[in-house]
Every structure is written in C-alpha cells, then in structure tokens.
Image (cartoon, rainbow, N blue to C red; front, side, top):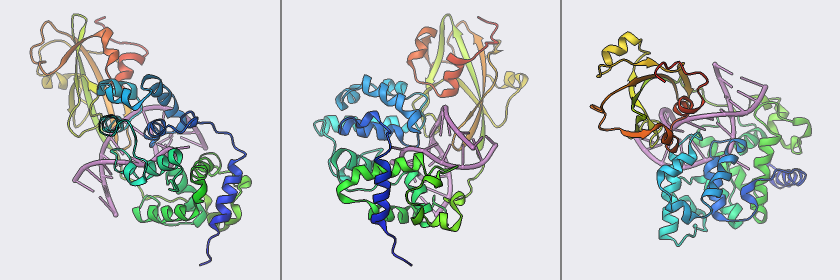
Length: 353
DNA sequence: AATTCGGGGTG
DNA sequence: CACCCAGAATT
C-alpha cells in the first residue's frame, strides 16, 4: 500500500486551523490544573455543554488545593446534571493526591499523568501536550472519525484493535515540535468540518488524502458495532413529608448515580399501579401522585420514575434516611430526574400542599 | 473484548 | 427515535 503522506495532512490541517477562531476558556494560560479540570469535565461531553460547568468550577475552586479541601458532596453538587458522576469522585481523589502528596504539582510526564485516577490515554496526551508541549497525540471521538475517514477504515471503530491502529496513525501524523497546536487543530477539524453528519467535504483541506471520500464512503465511516438494547427500569419514589422536612438518602453500591441523593425508592420489574403499590409499600398511610412520570434516558438504561408524596407523623422505618428542610434540599446533589421533580416540574398534582 | 458509567443536542 | 459527544474503569 502507498505510504500515506502524514506530513502533508498535518500541514494542511494546521493551515486550516490557523484560519479558525475557537476560543476555549481553559486555554488562556497553560495552568496544568485548568487543563486537567477541563479535560475531565469534557470527557464524553460536548464543549458547549461542559463549558458552563468548567467556568463554575474554576470560579469556586481556583486551585487544586481548594478543590482538594472541598467536601465530596459540594463537588458532586457542582457536577450535578453533567453525568458520569464517577468522574467527579475521581476528580476529588486526584485533587487530594496532587495537593497532599505532590505539593500541588501535577505530574509533568505522560506516564505520570496516565497513572492518575480518571486520566486515560486521551486525557494524559491532552495534558502532556497542552500544558507541557510534549509530543503525544490525542485520540478522542473527533480524531477517530477524521482518521477513520482518511484511512477508509471499514472495521468498527469501537473495537480496541481499530483504536490502536488510529492511535498509531495519529502518533505518526503529529509534528513533534507542534504537538499542542496539532492536537487542538485536528479536534477542531473533526468538530467543525469533518462532522459526523453533513461533513463539509467541499471545504476540506485534506480531501485529496481522504480514502473515504475517494471511495464515496464518507457517510458510512466510521462504522460501529451494533449496540444491544437498553435495559428498562421502573423507579417508584416516595417523598415522605414530616412537617417541612423530607427524607433523602445517598445512593451507594455499584449502580447508577452513586454518591447522589434520592428519595425512598421502590424498584420493580414493571410500572406498578397505585393498587399494587398499596400492597408493596411497608407503610400504612395515604400517598398521592405528585407529578407526571418522568422517563430518563441513560446510555445503557431507560428509567421511568413515578413520584408519590405522603404526609407522616413520625419517622418510624426511615432511620436510614436524612431529614432535611425543603428549603435546604437544593444543597444536595440529585440525579437529573429527581432534580427535575424538585425544581423544574411545571405543574404539581400534589394535593397535600 | 465487552460492558457500564449521564445527560443533552441534533438530524 | 438513533446517534454522538475533548473516555475511563471494570469485568
């Protein structure tokens, strides 16, 4: 096979990038803390979605020491709504490690960065290049799409062997003296021009190097393995009211939403009717539907949430729960569906209040 | 190698 | 509705 002209491709992408203005707030300086924080926040997250979170984090936690000193619940509250909450827990763990064991200094080698919890090959390469100008090529969703098209890769790109092939291409393509520039350029190129749908092939600076274009396969690459159907789950939430307080509990174990708060939960194979709920609920008081059901789409699950409220006179049977004022509940981090119930729900059907 | 971890934007 | 996003960790 003909040797691919990596130098020409990177040169054209860099040239294209020099005419692009995409300012990113975490790149105003080369503070490793800001680069690291932004990269963790942006994992599997659109820049437009993650940027407001980043701005709030640097405002509230300007240094790694301030982040390390914060309680995990405060960090989770700031992360609320962003998803993949293990990222926030790893963020806290790593901040403490850097602040307490390394005098506030992040590792300055690729291997050192890769050893941090929550930092994988992409993030280690991103920090190494953006913060320290080291020649490591990033491979994110954008780079995978761009290079899969350039090479006309027919194999599924979510197979590890294909990712390794693309990483190898990116490594060879990266100009060692311009690692940071090229990494930024190829990601912007994928995000703005070589997009998943309706790519701007007419304006493409590397069209003559693109095998997918030559084959007329741009719209079929990258290819992915079919995903299996989502699991469906049914959460029936009981909101107990004792005076002006409600009962909440932190989720534990290895299920979704670990570390976030929720109400008294009854999970069942299917959606329960009010009659069926009467038999299942180990309490004998009246409960009332308090909102329309909410369907929450996760990456691997579909969760339908039902919300019922009841007024109670004592906390018997609720010893494992925290009693918090309605006014104070906004200080706790909840999954989006429950935050919706507490704050966004348009019309309450609740007859109690 | 396969699976799971959220949530929102987009066509 | 399906797909995708500045991926990583676990099994």
